[in-house]
Image (cartoon, rainbow, N blue to C red; front, side, top):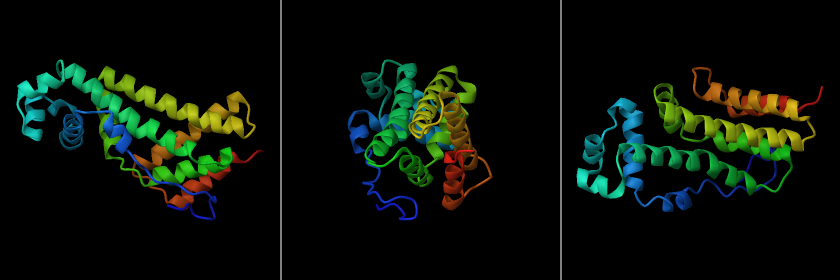
Length: 196
């Protein structure tokens, strides 16, 4: 995929999550749990529901996991790797300025499937462990943004504030009814990169 020349002139190889999937030999269980989360919410996740989803037995589940709690931690870890670390890896491939990378972040994430994240965020409202995992995701994403703003020459405090505005405005427009076009998001990003 080639980034819009009005945004930046770098090649982008696309999102390849296969490497992450290879790290999870029990991926069918994880994807089943995420599907149940999205369709029915966190209260619907049980060993029986998971077994029905993948057409396996509770013995099969117990061979792969030491109980539901261990399983749920693996779902959260997979989601963290897929929805945060993989995007960081993608952005690391961009050999441009911090400004180019921030604009690319907007472009890359606009096409992301948000249904997993919405389900995890709902889960985090009810479950302390999911909340802790979500906090780790948010902190990591904010740290990446703050690092980019620091590279642009903003102070530590300014970088953190700009990263928080950037992140929450992107989350806010994606997970609320206030939808934004790519052009609008890029304009917000460019505004945040401007100096007074």
